[in-house]
Each structure stands twice: as structure tokens, then as C-alpha cells.
Length: 251
Image (cartoon, rainbow, N blue to C red):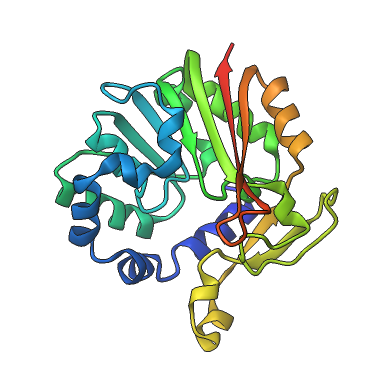
């Protein structure tokens, strides 16, 4: 595991289970919401899935299972790959409470066991700020390609690169040149929800933020055919871009 991955793992295991309980409720409460309306819990990401029943989905950096469990409730066979044991605990307890099964592999995404998972999935899916944790986007896209069956689909939904220059999602991360290739140390995503005393104690992550062209070119040069690219408004200000979704198929 790379040094920056170890640092990110430490950050994502800092009181993560307790954070999910505080913000999403105990696993039993979260499960009731998922069971009541799994499509609604997927939000606009549901638009990118052709079907669910029997589809093998790799949920990359799937965190606490907030999308994996609704997908499983809709009939998909879901495997979360994530670096945090604390995330696994919350996700698996929620899945059990919801009456569904998910697989959860705690690992560095770039070290997924391809002896087991190469050409295995129909869909790889990620959302909510994933790419900036990986300092070599080509290595990341190469792994996504390897996980998919021929003709399989990648749904890559992430924070819009516009957030490099304007904090349109209110993540409280520093602004920089849009074209910066800097790797920088910053607070983990949940730090802003804690009191200042605890916030100062929290482990920090190592980030590398990409431009739109870096993301699209990496998709194209690593064996994908780009099918769709959508931009979505910020949660805080609908006049500004906040997220994007790229849909690509393995050639």
C-alpha cells in the first residue's frame, strides 16, 4: 500500500462509524429508509443504470453503503471496495438490517485482487468525491477497465473540477489554479462537521485534483469508449457546477 493510501486510510477510519450513526442514524434507521424507497435513495444516479436484477456491480470507494444497499435491494449483486474498516462495519450492519447481502472488500483500490475480480463486473460505479484520492489517474482507470467484463459500463460520478477554483460544494478545501497538478494535504471530507478541537486532531488526506480534460483523456486512453458526460449543479448554488457523471463502456 502506498504511503498516501495509508494516510487516507487512517483519516477514513477516524470515528467514521460514529460519524455515520450521527449523520445517517443507527444502521437499523438507515436500513428502513433504504427499504422504503431504494430508487429514491439512489437519487439521480439511478438514471445511469439500465437494470439492476442480477447485475454485478463494483461500488468503488463505496463508503458506508449508501448507494450499495439500495442497489442490492433492487436486485443487484454488489461488492464495495473501500479502504475503511469502519465504513465496512456500518455498511454491513445496515445491509443486514435491510435484509440484503453485500460483499465488502477492505483494500487499496489500486491493489484489488485481479486473480479474483478481473473481467468480473457488469458495472463499476463510483460517486461523491473519489478521483482526488488517487495520484495516478491512469492507474485508477486501468484498474476500472480490468474489473469490467468486455462491454461492461463504468459510471464515474464525482466532484466537478470547477471546485478546484471555487468551493461551490462548501467542502472548505483550498482554492488553487484550475491547471494545478499539485498533491496537497487537506482535511478529510467530514472534518467540517466536527468541533474545532476535534477537527485539529483528525488525520488528514493527500489529494490530487484533476481537470476535465485529464479525466476524459484518461478514460479514453485506458480502453473505454465514452458514451455520455453530464454536468450537475452544486448542492449549494444551482448556478454553479458541482458534480459530473461520465459514462463509458469497456472496449
